[in-house]
Every structure is written in C-alpha cells, then in structure tokens.
Length: 155
Ligand code: DQA
Image 1: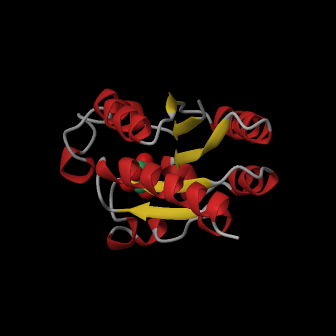
Image 2: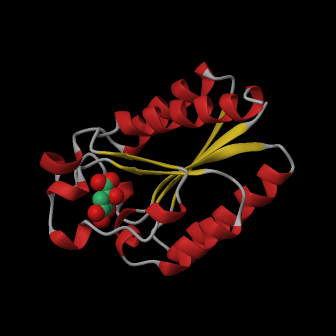
Image 3: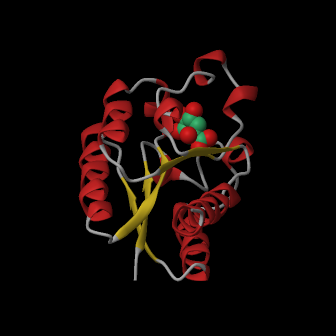
C-alpha cells in the first residue's frame, strides 16, 4: 500500500498553543489524525513527521524521492513553516526528486506580513494549499490522490 509522507517544519510542534488566533486550536496530533483519515480514504498509509531542523527536512525529501522511485511513496505534503521564506536548500531538494510535493500553509500567508509573501518552495511544488487551517492538509492529500489518479489514467 503506498504511503503519503507529511512533513512539518519548525515550530509546528507547538500547534494548539502557538498563536491560536493565526494557526487555530488543533494540535499537531490532531492534524496527524486528520491526515490519517484523508490518506486512508485513498487507500494510503500515512507517515507523519515534524522537525525544527532544515537539514532533517531535506534528508526526508531525499528519502521520499528514493521511496517514490521504488513505488512506495505517492508523494509528499510539506508545511516547511518559516523555511518556506528562507530556504533555497529546500527548493533544491524538491527539484532534485521526482516525488510530487504539495506545499501547505495553515494561514493565508499572502494576507500576513510581506516577508511571508515569497516562497522559495512554490516554484518547485506540484501544488499549493494556503489558508484553510488544518483542513488544508486533508485537501493536499486529496489533491495528491487526484493528481496521481490523473497521471495513471490519462493517456
Ligand atoms: C506557516 C506560515 C509560515 O509563514 C510560518 O512561518 C509558519 C507556519 C503556516 O502554516 O501558516 O511557521 O507555514
């Protein structure tokens, strides 16, 4: 059964208590439960991870690339947190693998401070989901499934 890998970057371990007026009341464990349901609806298993370290996220994207090449991983859902706005290295990692990566943000970054308006990841992303709170993760998994289905059924 293929896996969807959901990667969370810095400070997302604090969801639930971190600026709830911006990021909502749901904890990262709640988001994981939501993702597990969305993945199961498509017959996928879920691999859900969080790290505060840029290099760890890069290693995980490389790992996803290898697993995707082996047919084990359908794709990646990535909320890179603030690294979105700073990391050329994450951009390069996404470009280096064939696994589709969907960029997710809980908040509508475009309605916030100007420094959040630019994403180094968007040009390398297969799709982007922004501003739907925790539900955005489920939307990203659904989008990944539709994309995968189209790829395999469209001549
Ligand atoms: C975020 C938006 C980023 O700007 C911020 O640094 C985060 C969370 C979001 O999910 O809305 O840590 O990625």
